[in-house]
Length: 221
Image (cartoon, rainbow, N blue to C red; front, side):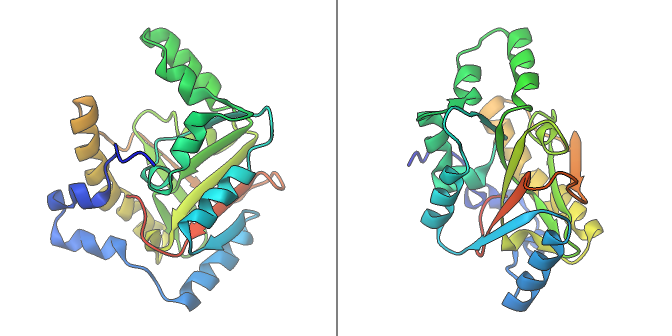
């Protein structure tokens, strides 16, 4: 697995002490209750505590010949799943195509197409105990696939991202995930990040479209 990515451990020095409250794993009873509330919103949930099991489950979600893309996700990188996407065995990974494009206008066009992939993988930035799934990024090229564009949406999260309310979940994004992503982006891209687009999945109207793979541990930002 590639180790050329940043984890929160690499960037946590820039967080204030209060931010650590946004990185706690709740008890099993709380996790079970949250899973029930997510499933009531017509989102399937698979809870796993083994990263290899999670990685294999994600692989199984890709049909042969599918077009596939992902939002930038430290969790997917930590699992090694980004490497699986780049290998693109029996499917088309749009990220490989994007990596070969130098022209910014062409890149933007392919990014727009990518949100309509057959399968789109991303990670959540926060989970409300009431069942909403929240994600944000600067351009919207990741979360743009969430509401409608992607045919199938597979989200990954970990239990440390569960917050007691929707408002607290938004606070987690702004006060915890953003400072970490801002530091990462400044180092990788030479400019910081912002919460440009924030998406909350309240209910999935399309049956069997959206799934959350929930790791009972601490992953990602």
